[in-house]
Length: 330
Image (cartoon, rainbow, N blue to C red; front, side, top):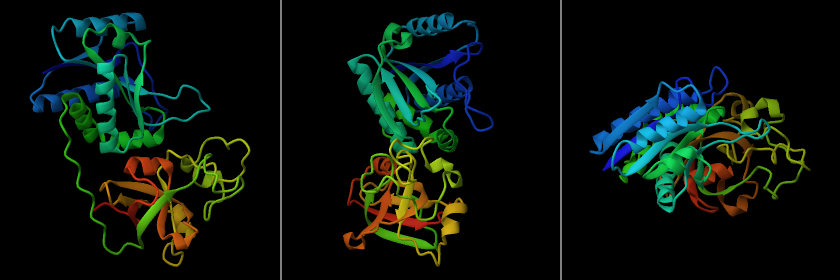
């Protein structure tokens, strides 16, 4: 097997850049990812050729140079381009990983890469997406995919990318080579946690949650500015409450907290996270406390989760989860 992989844009034709001090620089990070993925592929026994454009001065020259390099490498299996995404409009937030393709074979490759990256790292899965307007996909000779690792101007993406850089690169390599990444063992629950619950779950929050009124608030967060990372940048039309303004893609959770042990101020202000583990998949993710619930104790549910967290844990309503709070890594 032989792979040709290059970084998007060029030394003198810069790509996207997030805001300082936490944003990512697309060109710099794409080069890091390319080299680490290449290292991982070679460790799997895959012949791998890398390329970074240090010469071009225009976008047209850059695209031509990259495509020409790929096509000059003789017969090989896949052409891969590494990029990072950015918001297209200032009023819309976006997060997660997506992989672009143009052919049916490319779709299979793109689907394999994006699923492995998101399953391993916790990045939101934006899926494989067909694009017919990109020169890299149209002009390279072999089956191709363009990886948009994450958003350079979404702070949760940037934080998660930095934390999970190694496993993201391992997953990209695994998706290309068709090998499985060994799952990371779930963390052991720490002793002496303040809150612990086990039971079934459901979802809540965001513009599509018709189970709450348009004006319904949250139990211990009273204003957008108290936890802006939890919310959509604009109040959804026809609503006034924070429950419907929650960003469904953010990992948040509601439990029947014991306020004597975990006061409202702790849940809101400490920055502590809850560790949520799906019993059927074994996947664990950290989530922000956002509300008190589920309110219907007769259902036996232990927690309500954000739609994004449900998807990432690969659970549906009434699947079982375990929650510990606060979680601190050993």
